[in-house]
Length: 636
Image (cartoon, rainbow, N blue to C red; front, side, top):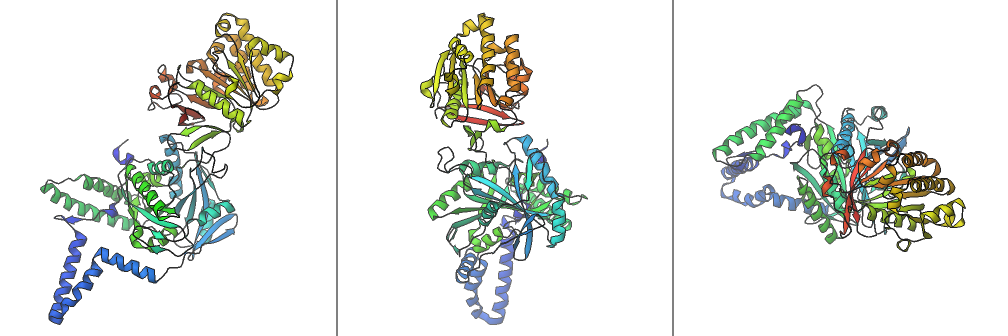
């Protein structure tokens, strides 16, 4: 893949030409002011000198901004008043005589290149519709769990809404075009049925109280500060979404993209190429660094080439962030976090508070942007706010997503397959993770649990609810009696001799059959955990029974958890692999090439943390065709 594809475009509009070390704007201002002063002296003589102080105030940027702020404090702007309209199955929003159709966007993003490519394809299809699109991502607290839950306390999630509009404000044509948009891609879903809760989130974009300009923010009922992207030098990957999520910054994200006249695009690109060529010669003659100019030149040349194509995919875009906080000191803290996160992501943003309330109105107006930025398809895909975590908070807490800092929950009885595979070398943290799962399952009464424990690693004293420990012989005896002890226990831990199991085939068969019997006798949800499952899977007779149990587990509301040291053990039973949609890969120093079938080659399985004396462990969690890196705390 070449460098142009891997990098986003630089903002050619942000480039300011310099001649012999001076910015062209400065030279023009000096020429105009000098000419004006000479004319005034010619007409009024020495009295013309009186005009110099006000002239400086008008021309000097700092003085000009101060005048603007003073005018805005005297003349208070009225907040925008958005109107929601529902018509023909669509929800529209009207702002200052301009109308847009609303759509909610959800993506199955997992912080990996393959998923990014699939979402990029969908965004490209949206670009081809000819519509202008403005996306707002609104932060909010979790909706499905109590915000005071320690696992999710302070965590913010983002809901993304698309404002679809056309420049002519032709509502009839807009509706027809919107109805032709594909509602789903491989990893993207659009919802045009906007609920009242979504409308409430959208209203958070718009300020209701009067705002007063301050040094680096706008004060009001909620203090706000607008940051706009000036330029970026980064790979074509949505890193800023990850930065916002990890830091839980309360910032509304706005990304706008609108159709751009090809002739205008060509003029801009040609002008920048000419200016850069001239400046490059000057800088080279002075032995100065030309890295920035070279990168801007590449972007300008790409814009020029794209503008000559029949289907040019260059749009005029803008990326803004509105940080909101009820206290000025809190806002300053969040601004600092945002600035740091964007710099790490290779993005340069400007605090637009100097523009006063004008920056807020441009942010709220879906037709405007604070700083224009021409982008191609890959750049648009990289900056589009479509890469936030989905809010999946039902089920059992597994651990934290290392990419986003968000908790991961699993409601496995709501999936197509209930079964697990957990694999990793000795001391990698498999049993510790399993113990935490049992504790969380029992404390929430999510399901009953049967644990086959040949190494005596699990004990009732560690879990809440009714729990019994018994030998294999006693367990089978009670099972055959259909005793109340078996039916009433929430957790059953079965101890057996691993060496005897390996020597005596009858013991293995009895154990395998007892698993199937438990599955059919107990009517509630059940989770059956098989430790050291490799011993069972290497015996043809017990393997056949286990495969049959896994194949029919869904019918009996049963989740079978296979725990083993090697992925090769799972491959002994194809049925187990096919019917286990949840796979957890802990540290493994052997046969890592076998794991590449599930986890890409770039991920190093040998460096995952884990072990009894560690404060945390790590694993890769694979679910369907998605995977993430899971951080598991040392205790619950």
